[in-house]
Amino acid sequence: MRTVVLASETDFEGWKTAARGLRLEGVEPARARFVTGEAGQAALFGGEEAGGPQQEAGAFAVPRAFVETAGNLILHRAADRFDLMYRLLWRLRDEPDLMRVVSDPDVAAAAERVKNVSRASHKMKAFVRFRETTDADGERWVAWFEPAHRVLEKTAPFFARRFSTMRWSILTPDGTAHWDGQFLTFGPPGRQDEAPQEDEVEDFWRTYYASTFNPARLRTKMMQSEMPKRYWKNLPEAALIQELVASAVVRTDVMVSEPATLPNERFQRLRAPVIDRAATDEMVPSDLAELGRGVQGCRRCPLWRDATQGVCGQGPAQARLMIVGEQPGDQEDLAGAPFVGPAGRLLDAALVEAGIDRAETYLTNAVKHFKHEPRGKQRLHKTPNAGEVQACRWWLDHERKLVRPRLILALGATAGLAVLGRKPAVQAERGVVIDTPEGDRVLLTVHPAYLLRLPDPEARRRERAAFVADLRKAKDDTIRA
Image 1 (cartoon, rainbow, N blue to C red):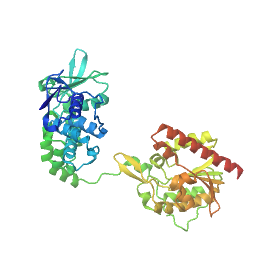
Image 2: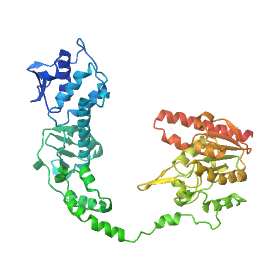
Image 3: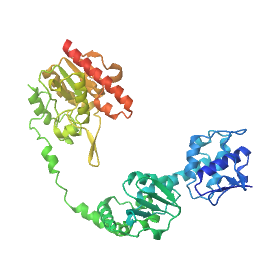
Image 4: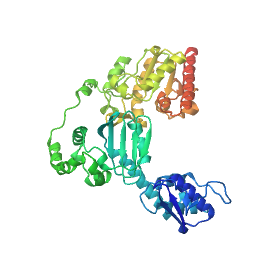
């Protein structure tokens, strides 16, 4: 039996060095044993120096997936985790794709334990509660926590990033983490009596928790799964849980019996008044002002129900260039004007760069109402479907007849669908003037919102330059036409 003495329960570097040496020597898993001892004895087995990472005969590489798995697996509290790690390493030499075989018992066991470690790290982020104390340097925040697995060093950098401006310590039975505002250090195991038991912030935290507790959405089993009882003793809000759960039914009945709340007054003031004269196919607006009034009464599709108001185009009645976007965004919906949000500001800058005066351009959208879905306090954009585009095309066609531009610049696929009557391949067709059966001339390009979503700075720079080039083509074409 070959015995490897590791410096600590989480001595991954020592384990890698020793396990590699054992594997290269051909020591089978049944004959290898890993134990932990005092620091300074890492990478030793049986008093002999462990095999190092040098390229010996029969040396082999392991996939990154194994290194990542083993690095997390060593944090698990299972006593046989070292044996499982070495067993996987032993097999990888002859089975290089082993980590991809998720049905393999060893791989599955490792994956389950890694998942437990990840869950323990997540719980630590959620349930560490700092309490205020003081030391020689002033204010310091200290927390006691008992993680399910040895995840202190894995998780502490999260707290250093999140609470970078305060000095804090996290004490656990496995070790301690300390942040002084610049450096993160680790120390020996701590004791619970070294952490303050309560501070004045506790009452605020309990008040906050009670105020956010929604009895109508209570799922006791799910709550206990997400907030296991093992953590309750260190959570100030845990003292309220039993009472809040017991009173949930009564509180829910009270909520249900209360009358509905009144509509938001600010929203109602912003909402445009409904025009009595509903828009129909027979209505032919004589000018853009009448068209704008008609859009406010439009019921051609359901989008009007959730929008603040319809947003018509803006610009000169005889503009040479008409720019058509997709739909109003959140800011456009509130302001009642097109292209005033982030995409509009990007468009403004690009127009200036291309030498186009926005004041001499007619800007509008394929769809006149904001299509969105609520997400908390936000309203997230949703792309209009073909039916909604077709329903609103009636208004766009009237805008085209009233403005009679020399060129229509369609921003993106939805605008292209509304103007051309078909969904275009924007990247393939952009930059080329298309003549429509109605006698309009159309140039396709991307929507400025597309540029805002590009994560890569170089791609964003390249695409913005191409967008400005398309705008210059539009300007040149309106001069020649």
